[in-house]
Image (cartoon, rainbow, N blue to C red; front, side, top):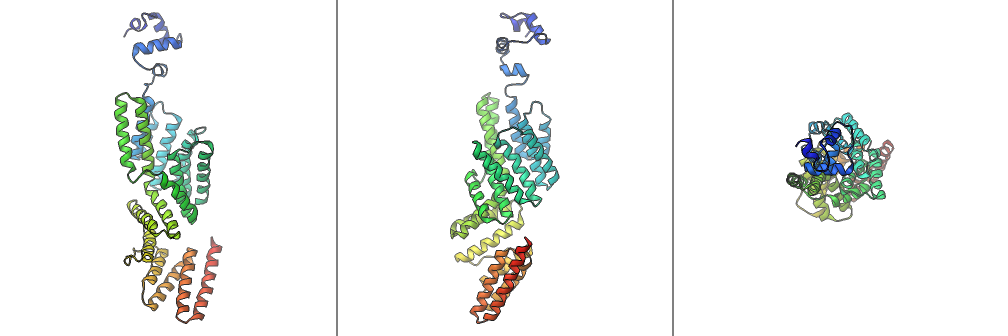
Length: 392
């Protein structure tokens, strides 16, 4: 289209030429006229970017989140026209990839960069960078400060009117993990309950890919508002998929609470799911812990005598020895297994499990008419519990 063809009948070719040369500025009416003649959106004429430019960047972000590869996010960071929010999401993606390889220094840098891009953004966007920073802190051994950051972010969402389900899910999941690290089973269970209520189901990746394909189709058809909704749903589902392995912690925390509340069937369901998710994600230590808790629960429910998993550390071996004591029909064997369990718990804890094994051995000795020995066991056990308490 020539300058004259674009200009007529309302304007002149000379006017178009002066606009192109930057000598004059088009009015709103002129922009609307030229956009109509060119069959494009006014914003595209004003900015030089297509109307679907932002949406195509969102689609690229969704594809990068599906892959989870840092290279995809780094490549996207070089794209023209990325908003601060989109740049922040790229840094969050790179940060989580670094966490997956235990590169905590790189992860911390990326989450701080995300925070920098989100200054002034709505709380539900900033929450995802906070989740990343908290994950780094927890992995560095500072679960207490991680809990503080996550709790502040969660409360801000509610207080300011931004209770975004995706952000809340991530915050509650990581709170459940951090509280579990601290041994705070009550708070872990509360966060886990909230997280599991928000989780959409067992196959978030399948759901995400469906939304992504729908978004591509709608975008190709020029149905931009509908495409934006589909791509947004895809990105939320991909974020949930990255939390899938951590949902094992939530099922375990809720299962332990149900066990304490005598909801044995509910506990069995949750702990079975937790063991499966831990196994699928390669979290073997946690899988063994959960398998031992399941074995104790099945034993209490009178289900067929459970097979005990192979212990991977001394505390797990002590837990297994205590369960062997519970399963043993011979008093001598019971005593031997309980003595071994107490020896395993004595130096490392956990204190409640040490105290429980000590009480069980004392009861066994008392029932056998060995009261003096039972008293000595209780005194030694109390001293060990107090010593462990002073070390924490």
